[in-house]
Figure 1 (cartoon, rainbow, N blue to C red):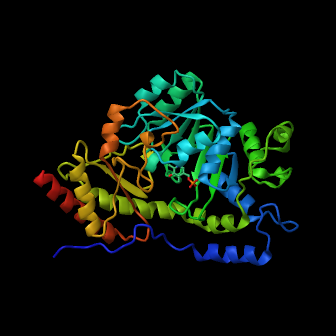
Figure 2 (cartoon, protein in one colour; figure 1 turned 135 degrees about the horizontal axis):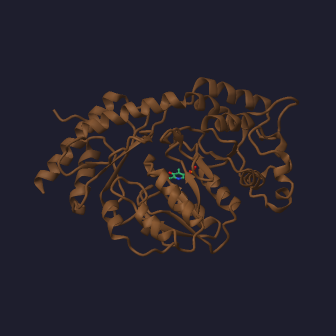
Figure 3 (cartoon, rainbow, N blue to C red; figure 1 turned 45 degrees about the horizontal axis):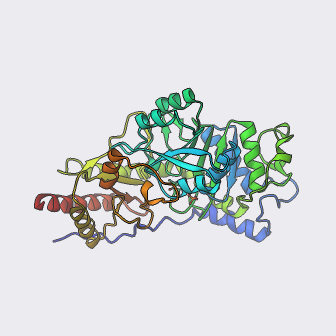
Length: 398
Ligand SMILES: *Cc1c(COP(=O)(O)O)cnc(C)c1O
């Protein structure tokens, strides 16, 4: 009998009941705008910021409209001007080069290793160029050797912004992802680790950068109502000098996020249990390589990648088609045309770059799969059996 998987790869879990209750309360109050609070009330957004700052161990936190907005605010806070170069990953998703382009800056792409992290050798070369900022994307939750990366960037005087859209809850040697760079950016969009539809969070220990980000987000002169903001003195000059680029979070989204933040450690454990079932089920399949996960990395297994390195294109599309027929939706980063979210550096033609043959070889082989928490561990075991069977069948025929 041929096993078929019938789960839905884009079905997330419902919002926790506590979040629904809190959201109803906000709606009944009519006070959705973050600064529209009753006398003596902190507001859901300010409380979320305080709680997320505590969760990451950051001094300051700002909740914003999206992960992309958080990255843009970080770039602006660092003074990235139109025409400036910004280093970033060749293997990432469109909002990352998009945030750089949105401030008029020019992405300069750094290669990817077979373990799907930024190529530190390539970084060490390119860090000698014009760029003064690295937008580091922890793409698909893979964290590079952060000590080496920070040493390379510190040496060259390059500031690091961390894009933690896929590493909220992750860490390197116990340091939460987003806490080694000058600013850390997170997304609470539906497909990330907390779900408010759209939303973002920005953390930093740097009072000046955070004061700028808060002014940018559209705080008018109400920054004193924040619970995770730098002291008022930090705003003395900045409040006159920083334009308003509205991108606040609202109390409704913050209300549904706060209970999810409380649940995050438990959710991370559930993701990783599923990830390990898949990883075990895909071990030792001829022609298929899994990434190795270093002991220093605390990852969140909300997706899994494997490599079909040097496979011919028709064989890869055959694997994808066979898996799809059995209900397993895989995404391939190697296709000639970007499809859905699977674009890569040479798809972003507004940011031309020289080809990177070693990275191209990796990118051509990357197959990616989301792991929604609506899948059980048994589902993951079944999915692994299907992928194993179909990859093996195509590999043997080739
Ligand atoms: C989702 C995502 C973001 C931020 O996305 P928003 O949709 O703007 O919240 C940033 N980087 C990566 C790699 C992402 O996948």
